[in-house]
Length: 206
Image (tube, rainbow, N blue to C red):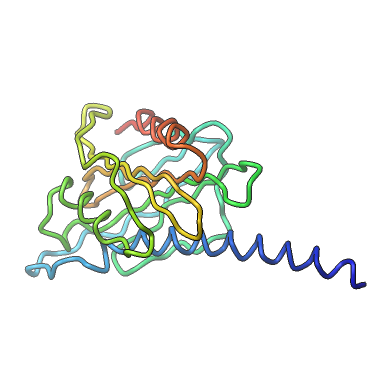
């Protein structure tokens, strides 16, 4: 009985770290929303539905887009789907890495009517809103990329918490009254998250 107790504690510590990482990422994804400016009475867009997934293909008729997850990723269906009012967590997908922390892709739709910002400003403020304890370092400031004939904005950064360095890329486009964003997260190498973010080129519109 005593021999099993240390193993149990190790498992609990690993699960706790994974949950802590998830909630950290999820809460950070809402920080830009929490610091939004007060709207000038603009009418909010109708809430889109969450979309559907078939294999690695995500599609959303409300937003008129499809996106293909990177190889090896699977949708995590056991996580909460609601964020702050006006924001909708469209999808969270994970990849097993052989380490306690998984690679992750997060998709969010945020009501653009609540902001006076351009897409570039939205992306910039998203990173600046992160708490100091994460020791965020911007690797490349917000810059435009072309995807399926539309202008997206991307920012690359890293963070360090509890001795672990995580690399993230945040990509966003304004679509049908929403800021639609992808957050790519990896605790491996910068090249890994860059490869994951490359999947944004699979987005198509209709």
